Image 1: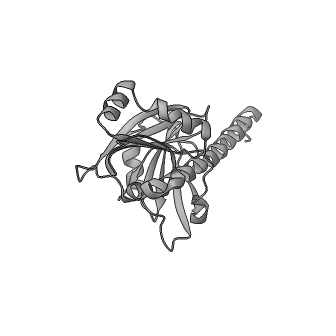
Image 2: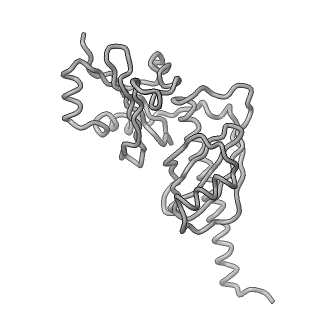
Length: 230
């Protein structure tokens, strides 16, 4: 017995929506990996591709990429582009990590199709098209007037990096002389910036990533330097 035409049409729409969502999730993951290897750790050596598995749900989805063992939580609301909201090391297998995601992050999400797998060529993770408008906006959006005034008056300086199109996060540097005092990590959501984490040179647990420290010497990554004693 054949299904009614309207059910077949709904099924076709559902599948097309899943395919479109998977494509945009892959774009978001690629941008996130690009940012990660620009700011957090060096690009993997002798690695041609990164293999990712994506479990797509309504509202929030989960991705695990191997062999780099990085997982991501991704907002997938359906009415706008997917957005990576978290990425971190994941020692567990995909099934175990996915179960934890369903239990702790998205217990009521509706599964969209089957688990999707895709491959990202490492050679494609070096591109950066600078978002000039968002880069300029970040300078005034990530600091309150009070914090800016207090830190600058005490001789500290700020470094504001460029933002590449698709970057999920943003790092604001505060320095004392040539030494990093702290780095604040912000989540990028459209033209808004939400504070998420602080790297602190004074603690081992929050120590800034080596890549982030080394980037102080890469002039191409910086938009503006503000403050500091002359």
